[in-house]
Amino acid sequence: MLGLEVQTIEKVRSVTSQTLGRLNVAAKIAIVVLVCVLAGGLIFWLSNELVYYYLAHTYVEELADAYDLNPGITRALLWASFAAIVVLAGYTFSFSKHKRRIGYVGLLALVIGHSLLLGRIDANFRKNGVAEKCYVMTRTSIKTLNRIGVDPDTGRECRPLTPQIVEKIEQYRSGHRPKIITSTNPTFFDPTTGEPVVWYFKNDRGQIELFDLMGFHPQTGEELTPVTRDVVQVWNQQAAKVVRRAPLRIDDPEKFGFFEPTTGATKVWYWRSESGQYEFYDGPGFHPRTGDEFKIATREVIADWRQQQDAATAKKKAEGELREKEARERAERDAQQAQQAAERDRQAKEAAAAADRQRLQSGADCDRLAANPTDARRSGDGVPFDVLKLQADQAYDACTKAAATFPNELRYQYQLGRATQFKDRKQAFDIFFRLVGANYPAAFDNLGGMYLWDRKDTTTAISLFKRGSALGDADSMVSLVDLIDKGLVQTPNSEQTKLALLQRAAELGHAGAQRGYELQLQKLNQERINQANQQQMMQLFGAFVQGVARH
Image 1 (cartoon, rainbow, N blue to C red):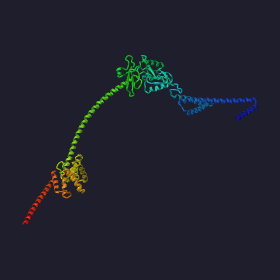
Image 2 (tube, helix red, strand yellow; image 1 turned 45 degrees about the vertical axis):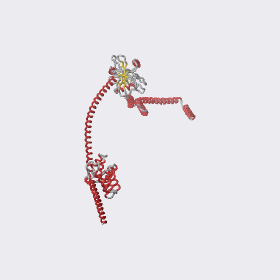
Image 3 (cartoon, rainbow, N blue to C red; image 1 turned 90 degrees about the vertical axis):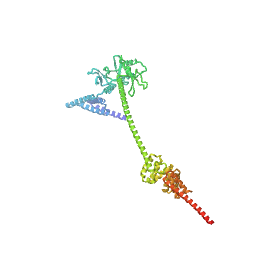
Image 4 (cartoon, helix red, strand yellow; image 1 turned 180 degrees about the vertical axis):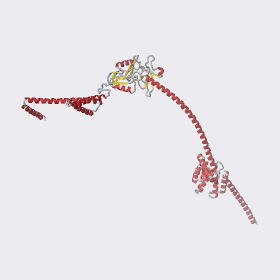
């Protein structure tokens, strides 16, 4: 491929040499001049375009740097500026006066617009880090100027801006003011730039006071100055004169005194806890619990501590008053509660007495309405069965309350069972069944009667009557006498048995048994008389018969 190109070039050169060889000298010179003119024009045009491109590139780069444009917008703006410069520059060489004016005005507009756009950027620093502005401290604020030197309004030096100074200025404008540095090992210069980040003031005694912000001294009103290495050295020598020892805690800093009376120098250091409480010490050092370095007590710290003390005193006073008020209110509440408790106790006693009366009344009503006259454990005279039937509802209600009030008193349960026989035979049966299990004597006759008449169980009824009789229940005895009369109970001597049962029931106060006993006794006596008469008549008859036989 390379050989073919060489052959082509050689062929063109050969043809060119042959063609020129046929021309005369004048023609050759004319051709050479024409070629040179064309080459020079091309070189001039290319140079001109390169100059335009360089101007457009410089123009756009400054704007891109100033406005931080991205590469795409920068390239678009570059080609637009290049085209505008080419067109406007071409108009300036036009034979038309109107176009030349357009060219001049357009280029002038580009230059002025470029300057105005750059002037709108209010930056503190250039891209290379060089400060664009400087600052001047005034009594009321911080001014920033565009020229380093002396401020014509205040006559103060306009110091160059640095990144650290810009941050400090923002703090100052946010309301912060210089505070004295109490640390024994402060950072004087920025570790990355070496710029001073501490300001100082030298008092009349030659002592250097350090501050964390530019501004004016809070007592003298003099402007603070950035520290230098010489000032730092002097301050270190000054700090080295402080005797190192274990600091002692000051319990009463007001009594100890915060300042030297002769020099006015601070003689108290402090430590502040996370909760904001102050501890004061008589020298520099470190806190034994936290390891925090003590700081020199400033007037601001002292004022804050005194404000805390006043607040604590006011709080203590308020708490004391509150405690006294609470004590008074508590005493009033206690008295009121005692009065209410006494009233409640009185009411409770009255309610208890009323309840007792009601309970006693319910028991008395149950005894009055449903007691069995033959019950050995009754209270009162009792009512017969036929009378109880007429007042069964009242007796049931009264005995229900009495049995609930006195659950251990079996008498009320028995009397409830008597009244229940007229309302619910099954419930009455259950009551008497439990009472029989508890060996309540009077319940045996009632339960035996229910077995006899309701369930037709004579055997169980007789067993219950016998058990009741053995426990001394007169009704059970009378019920046995009735069953003997009916032939349901077999005894060797029924009349004597009946008489014995009636006699025992009569002795227990059973009115029916007393009458039956008298009748049974009369019957037996009559039988004895009859038997005696029969024996006498038999004897007479026998004597008579014997007499007849002798005759």
